[in-house]
Structure formats: C-alpha cells, structure tokens
Image (cartoon, rainbow, N blue to C red; front, side, top):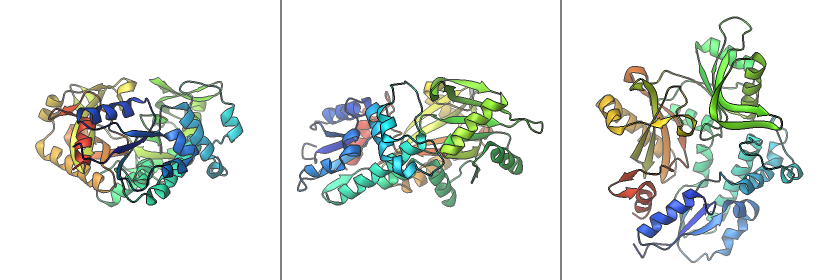
Length: 379
C-alpha cells in the first residue's frame, strides 16, 4: 500500500472526522493526508491550484460543519444568491459582527447557497487537476444536501420513499395539503439540514382553526432560532406556526410520518453505510418517539436482535434499495437512513447523506469504517 497516491482531505483540521481518517491511513502504513481547510477553499479556492498538477492524488471531501469560521465564510459566499429568495439574509458586515452563540441557527438557506458556491468552485479546480481522483464528486454532494432532490429522484427510480408534498410555503398550505392527502402526521425537515437540525414532526389539530402540535429540537431565543439537544412538544398556536413558518421559508422537505416497526417496544430505523455501492455497515437507532437520532435521546439497538426480527425477504429488499440509492450518486460512500414499516410490512428510504460515515466504534473484518473506506478507495 506504500505505493498508493497521496491523499488530500478537504475538511476542518483537528475535527474528529479528519483525525479518524488520518488514523486509518496510519494503520494502513500510509503517510498522512495533506489537509486543506474548508475555510481556505471558501475564501481562496485557487489555493488548490498551488499544489502540483503533475502529481496523482486521491481527494476526500469531508464535512464542513462544526467550525464557526467556516460557517461564517459560507454565509458570506451565499449572500448574493440569497437576496430575494424569501429567506433570512445577513450581509457580510453583519456576519462579521455576530457574537458567538452556541446552537444558534444562522440563515440556513443562505449558508446552503454558499456551500453550493464552494462546491462549484471545487468542481472547476478539480477539472484543472485531471490526475486527481475525487472520491465523492462535488455535484453528488450538492444533490445529497437537498432532501427534495433526492426523494424525488429515488421515487422516479422506483425506490420506496415516504409520500411527500410539493410547493408548501405556509403553515396553512401544509394543513390543507395534509388534509387532502389524508395524513395524520408529517415530518417538516429543512431540505439542507443534517443531524435532525431544523426538523419538526407536526400533527394538525382535529378541530377547524386548530394549529395542532409538533415535536422539535428548535426553540426561539432573544436573538433568533436555536437547536437544542432536547426535544420539546409545542402546542401553542402562535409558536407552532412560528416554527413551521421558519422551516418552510428556509426551504423544507415535507413528507408523511409513517408508523415505524418496533424492537423491544421502541420504534427504530437504520443508518446503512454503502461503500463502493455495497451495504457495508449498519447502525440500528431506537427511540420512544419518531426522531431516532442518537444525540436526541435515541440509542443504538442490538444488531442480533434486529436481524432476528427483520424477515429475510424484507431485509434483502431493503439492501437492494440501498444499492439503488448508492448507484444514483457518484460517491465512494453514502449514508442511508431507512425505516421499516409497522410490523415489517415494507420499507422506505428516508434520506441519504454525503457525510454519513462518522460511525465510531464499528468494525468489520478488523477494519474501522474509515479503514474500510480506505481499502475500497485503493482498490
């Protein structure tokens, strides 16, 4: 493996994702990767062109989150595109003046538009470096960061997904659409969100004029919206519509919340990581409520119990759906969130993630998740 081309990581130096991948390189007997920070490529994308164009490289694009400087750089890049989009917008001067506030949600659509701009920059620079092999194409990452794009693409491919509604811009339109579709409950997810950030499970009221209630990690503070590590139930009409209005204005995927299968009395879904098109790792996520993310009160379920409960035919059908999702994206790895219907009567792909491979503690044939990805990247 010592003859492998050197790796280049676009990521946040010091972030655990970068650190764990560097550890995988070390365990494989390979030299550490060169790391170019997201902040650098957001501000000076031509910095990549300072690297020699005659040298082969393998490029890994990692997540841009968990870094305040990167967040602010992306907000600035998205400012022009966000103007007139109907969402919250900050000027570059306002971005510079922002105080540090943990958990604050800053103009999600503007941030996303800036992220897309940087991905376009990467595509242009990679075209000038033909000897570089990019493991996940920026255009594929862009698609995976829009739940509206992916759910409709998967549906067109015949992959089972939750039913969804189009063109929902207001809470009243949401209630009308749900009545017309016969839905009892809906997920309203920021289309570019991740880790259950900016998400609500909404149930309309039964009586005319009732706003209903929702379950969410969002709350509004004196300076804006914040994500919390605790879910809360909201039932006041004004607050319900405020949360929904914010999510819909910033751009949301609206889909039916369908009853999930259960293990040991709790609902569950799965994160299935495909690597080079094949399902490689599975994490079972259980919870007492429909939002199963581990940082919001969910917990890892037992894989043996899971495999004992899932009918073999249904499991194979779910794996085939994951393969179909992986084929739809030019990425070495894709993290797929998948649920089984109540009583295991079918399955649905909930969403897919470009950076869904942070799964510490998992091993296969003695390799960590990043070790497995590294081996497959070098095949």
